[in-house]
Length: 197
Length: 269
Image 1 (cartoon, helix red, strand yellow):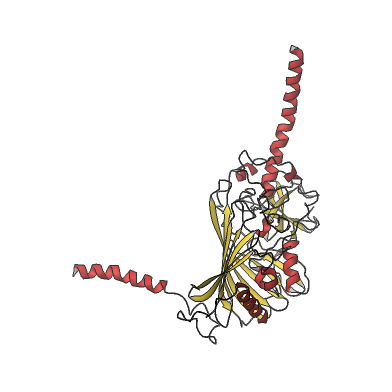
Image 2 (image 1 turned 90 degrees about the vertical axis):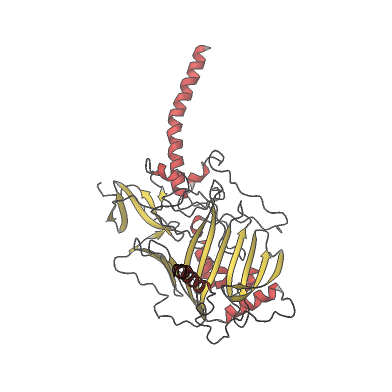
């Protein structure tokens, strides 16, 4: 009896030790992604436009147009890149609980439009200060994972070119710039091949 | 003597303030020299206009323009997880030449960004980090606007008004339409219309007179919890602008770096 319980506890501890850090990594990854992407089908009503240093899909924004039907369209989840959203815990703890709102009655059978993808919300604030969008940004600096996407770079980066692709080397972490919607974002990439840090 | 000085001190700033606060009727219409300035005392129509007719007039007028320039001052309401509401401002200058030229300058403190479409390709350029991306574009403005929005997630505010037939995009799914009345918007007499769809309540203010231009647009997105709003003022309309020949074509500045769109094939990997 006693030994069974201690075995159970040991197993639980082992699982916690393994899963715990994994979850932590995942959540950091998701928050960092949210800064730029924010608009996946699983992302709730986020649609973050990415400001304040990758602070997650921390706000809800309206569409920018009356419509015209089929404007946004349902975007398929980006292959192989959007995995982070699927494991995101349901908002509720600190997320403010914004889920997908049920369609208004009498909608004439028109499907509910997905949230505007992150890039469609043109938010241009002075990124040196950002908006008070939560503590997620602070977490990014501690454990930034390959694949994470941020909207601002840490200071003191150098530009390197490898195989015709330009990267930013910021203290040994490599970033590749790209456009996410209309915003320039930086994705953390593995060190370019043949490039010794 | 002292009292006189005091009065002057009070009156002078007050007068200055009054001067600033007078409606900018003249400055807002650089291209309106041919059109009579909107008169505050213009007589009301005998019959209450149908909202959809006013919309149709605006659409027809926009369609009749082979080129125009407008500034959009947009405020987007953001609802934080704490339910605090913030309002984010953005100003952009839009230049259109039918049937297939578009240029948009987005202003922000880090240098803004520019969008080019010349009938063959479109390009996005961000001067701050000095990066750009470009891709092939369809031969019409309509198709390009759709491509930008659907594939590249670059949504143009007031894009509805840039399409060749704004009317057809605006009147879809209408549940109700209201002619609210006539009102001054920045000194211009406008028809104020209100519409409802299952997802959006929206209002538009359209200039009353020979130039039925959209002057203001407000929408409430009911499909998003908390129903955030977007409001856009359309100012500095120029319906006969002179465009530089290279306004719509993007030539990368020296040292500008070409990058990809996130959703493109991951060339950076």
